[in-house]
Image 1 (tube, one colour):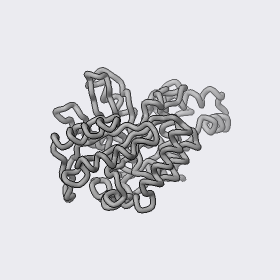
Image 2 (cartoon, helix red, strand yellow):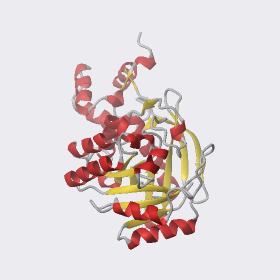
Image 3 (cartoon, one colour):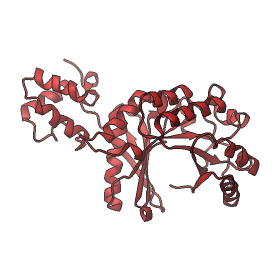
Image 4 (tube, helix red, strand yellow):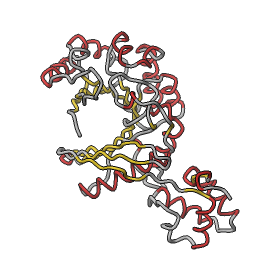
Length: 336
């Protein structure tokens, strides 16, 4: 007898593969559509919940397949309304998602994780201190969206409006699973969430940025930049040694020319390291080749990391300098 841990997760199957399964089981083809709808529109967390399927079919599916939804482990709500949720995966590993509400703008964003841990060892990042364990399954990424959307509805009476792949992990090193999760979230036959409201963030893997363009990505792209010259970026982001700024700018221009999707730079301001006016001047020069918005981010200090947050007045001066150069700038204050 096959153990539960060895069963294939049914959420790995495409609609066409589900159609083959129900045909093999002697069921009409429309049962596959029902199963697909339960998984990706109704967020079913067990086969027993699929109440419009015959009981015998539900039992057979439970014997042949696994259904491994993520489980809420801990919820932490901040005074500013931000909700951080720690999820437990079927194998016991933990990941986090964050709901970032801006009710006055009717903007409700979920920040999702794409990996357990991360292999890039960025010097300022808490996840970078962890070893990469595995990529998240498409269904595990989808679950973050689904469950945090329920939180948004419960606490704010409004569904999610935006998704950012900026949680644990490097999305472009989980390329296929991230791509599939976006297909599921934006499927017109399912949740029909607009890909234009989805942003994938990367530390900067040039060949994968080009791959996104070649594959016809319809979502937005954010580069975790954090320094506007190679010397400083090498110090905080080892990946820059193989993907330097010249290589990244070429890849980003290629992405923009092929997709015309929105590109942004994420720029955490570290006191005395990358927050001076000459840093702003260098950053402005990286904004000339294609349309780009700069998001300046207040640093959330990480235990064991020497970097500290830049003072607010320094961040404001930095932003003013960029605007003087004609750069589109948003300042994101620390949340959660």
